[in-house]
Length: 130
Image (cartoon, rainbow, N blue to C red; front, side, top):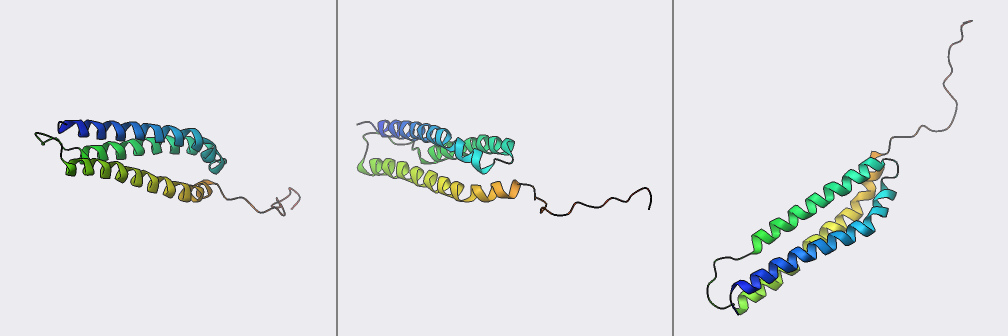
């Protein structure tokens, strides 16, 4: 097998997997973000858009760092092991980021909610007779 075939497979698996995972997160995460940001819906939509951008930047950077373009000749066992390790590494990074996001997002949503006044007496206004 030529040295470039595993590199093409790596790029396709990493890119295709990233698109698939992002679409799954987007499909199933919108309701979660709407619930977390129910008091500030524009913040929820903005958060999802920014999270998509960050997600793809991380994936593109990881793919760029892991591709090897200087090999010549046949693919080696080490190269194939490297391809498998890079796919597993990206899955680990995305999983950790997703878990962090799910754990931290509720705190962010609560922090954006304006404080509520406790129910009680209304402020008294001075009257004209005073």
